[in-house]
Image 1: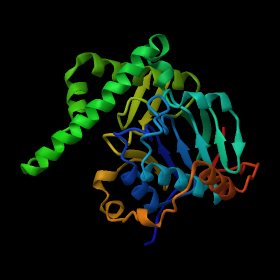
Image 2 (image 1 turned 90 degrees about the vertical axis):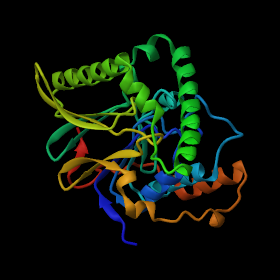
Image 3 (image 1 turned 30 degrees about the vertical axis):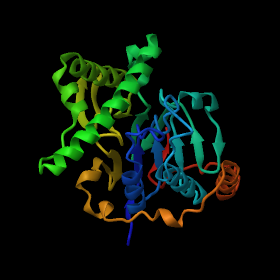
Image 4 (image 1 turned 120 degrees about the vertical axis):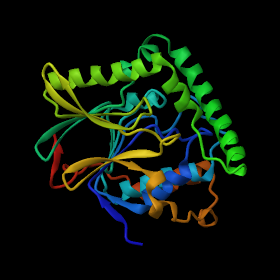
Length: 293
């Protein structure tokens, strides 16, 4: 199958290591595209809720696929979020075409683009981290309940529903927080002369223009791989929201788990390092039309 070429893919809020993560669907998507660059914009591995007892094969297959891209010298930028914040201590670490950074500033086709996870604007995260972690556990539990409800709903011939979306849309405080988050991000981006700003964190895929006192800014959010199963793609000079649930090609890709070798943790690490080949220099450009700002 010919893979669809994409200049840039932005993924966030995958939450590998949790029950709610749709790793199989993400893997199908990744296998359907040929990206020139990948930005992992936070909460890729959910270290907050990580457990050795729950790490399905498909979750590891996603990691190995990303490592495979790095081995092919595809630039991969990892911007840690709040759920994988321990990686922030490795800021500016580079290995092969992988670079870890807390924020990313690019110039794409002459326009300045600012990319960061977004948890810095979350008041709960900054002042009550224990409450945020408790909320994360509750959210993961709600997703599990939602899957059970949808299983029963499918048996009864009804459509799927999203309990968390209904709760978010029904709580005025949640809607107000999202609107405030977006406006604050855009105001700061405009002050710093960015035309585009890309975030994750709030699990709300979006592309819209926000007018501020300092000019208009295009706000974008890549969504998540818990509920929305979305990413941001840049191709042919424009940004768009990718939606897995509307992609019949990706959905048709078979994931063969039987071909995956059983490896111990040490063997797996050795395999990953061998694939990376321990290259130390990151390519200077993402592609001909992308450069560091």
